[in-house]
Image (tube, rainbow, N blue to C red; front, side, top):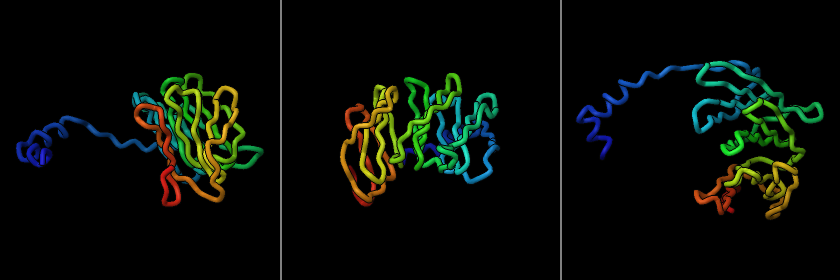
Length: 178
C-alpha cells in the first residue's frame, strides 16, 4: 500500500529516475557461473563457476584475480560462497574442499574438507559452519580443525544461515530445517 501511494504521488518514480543504473557484464569464466557474492561495502563482486572464481573490483570495473578451484588436479563447482566482513575473507564450498580468499592480499587457501555443500561464517569470523552429505560441522579457519555438530547420512543441504544475534546456525535440506 505504501509503495502504491508513492507511485501515485510520483515520489518513487522520482527516486528511481535520479539513480543511474549501469549494466556491467564481467568476463573471465569459460564455464557456467554458479554463484555471485557482493561484499557488504559494495567494493567486490565474487563470481564462482564450474571452472574458477573471479574477484572483481566493482568501483574500478576491473577483474583483480582469478582462482582455479582445483584439488589434486580436479576441478569442482563453487556450490556456495560466504563473506567474512571481520577478516575480509570469502569462503567457497565445493565437493573437493573449501577455499578461502583473503581480499586484502588476494591470496587463496585450501581447506582439505570434502564434505561441504553449504557454509556460513560464525559471528566472530573465526569459524565456518558447513553441512553436506555426512552431517554438519564447525571448522576453525586458523587450524582447519573440524568438529562434527551432527550426523546426517545421505542428506543434502542447500543452505546455512546464522541467526541475527550470531548464537544459532540453521541448516536447510531435504524438507527439513536443522
